[in-house]
Length: 268
Image 1: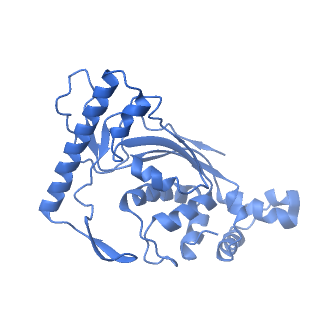
Image 2: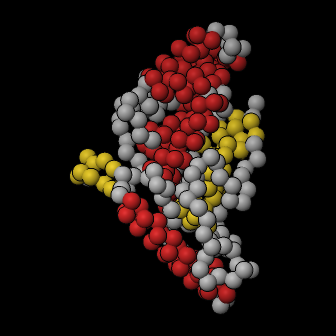
Image 3: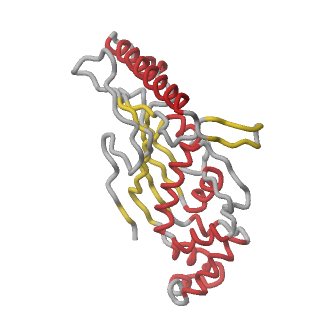
């Protein structure tokens, strides 16, 4: 019962804001042009994930092979069972499914995402291919100023001058860094050495495979919700990735997602 979808190619985006595109200074016409984005791409490319997967896994403990026959027998009872499992944190039935996402995001986002060792990752390699000059620059809706003490702070909008400073400095430094990278490659320096001058704002791409239980762990930490039992305050850029993953998952497993919301967004 899998769902398959072709991943994005090139520098395609997924309905996020673009910060504009800028040619790299001093680069020849035969060299790639430096680009800037302020969004992330998250594409669901393959899924075997249904609410029914949770139900038959939970019922097999008491009904054995008959659990498959009971999946669609009583929808309200099935909804109640999923909520019970979520509420009392019986987590293993939520693992019998799989979702694979294609993600394009800045490297600093992947470094946070990969802290979640409960997913499987295969990422673009800067050792084996020349990295494309696509860099992240915060959009004008990105809050820039941190107020308060660590552990109890909030972000507020920056001034027009602050936004201008962030955008201009980011564009300048990324363009200069990529020019240095190209000069080293042109001089015969290995890709794995030349890449050390590139900033964490450069975009990478990866396939991320995760089950619903693991995804709920990611969402509980990487999204901010006022009604969450345990509030989290993620960096906005990784929250952008998490929000797109959650939207895809909610369409695949609506009963499970609703139970997650109803029970304070706590991973079982």
